[in-house]
Length: 171
View (spheres, one colour):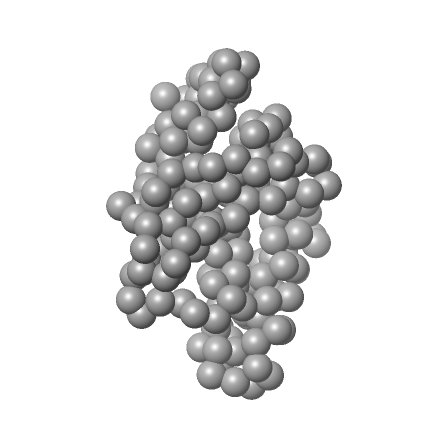
């Protein structure tokens, strides 16, 4: 199914007030699924300046993702990228060794948004959002203990993100 048809189908779900159903369908279409995903719940409406999705649940237990009821009022590639970000958190919290450090969890999830290493079918997002998410990734990297084990573990990926930012600045 081409992206135009996918967008139309999501719009029809949205008009019918079926945001959760649209999100579940998209998880299947773009292979962003996980056996430990327990479903969607709603949270407060989003606005263009602040779209919040969260993954909730105890470590080792199935996880729920909270999404705004108006999720699909925003660009579909961005929403897919945010869903993939949250699904990375589902995996981090349900597979041992669990990723206990929040900075590491966020680093890995933002890295996924940029390089799609976990969910390669997610479409590209705008250069604006790529830059914003790259900067957010670096923010979480910098919150890790300076020169500590986590920063050392992700030093090569940090260089990739920095190089990625440089290529974005030249566009």
